[in-house]
Image (cartoon, rainbow, N blue to C red):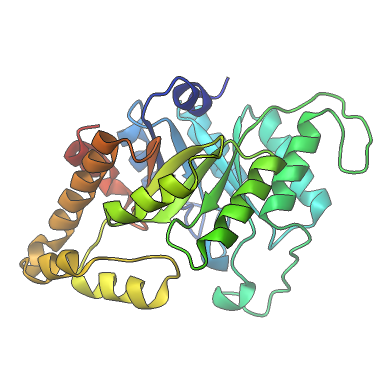
Length: 293
């Protein structure tokens, strides 16, 4: 059974972290970061050509992490593969013993480093979840029986601060119907956002892991407020970063992330957290320390 599934279904506080494969064949830094959190997290998301940028594949990286004794979460986007390739990727993951998968629609190729690449988008996030669920029934998407059936603990993403929120909840319902058992959220920085979100989604039978991205500067916070849909960094946090000496801001951001995780856990506002260090995965152990995890 998936470790993440076991932890969340037993009602324990789940912890996942995100790691992006490198652009190249040297995975030594990623593996070093992974070893540093072994035994401290219940799952490691491996991004799938994050931001439409060429990298080592999620599947290969997941296999390496599993060999290291970690619990990988395969991310699969619909941008680069049709339904044949997506189903094949999922079957390949099962052959490697990977038991967690997260379906994403994916960013368009125009935002990445190969803007001339043709996007596919044969399946969106809901379609990927449906494909995985169909494979778990022992058949492919056209009804042909499989020789061996995969098992996955399926997840999806959600944005707790969205206008209109009803549209986001409707999509959550579709994803749950398609097979999603847990959701990892967009980055949150205030408790009120999670309080309102949990209240509006309390009728849904699913697990919620709050997204945590540590701030590195006031400029980063302002950029996210202005450019990342669904992200809201309160003014008091921006001022706190602005008033922190430059050389201490990364550490202050880690401290703030730890404080938020503690508050979320104490209030029971989520079933766990998903830590996204974004290019600074070596800081994940320090975030865990700050949160008392």
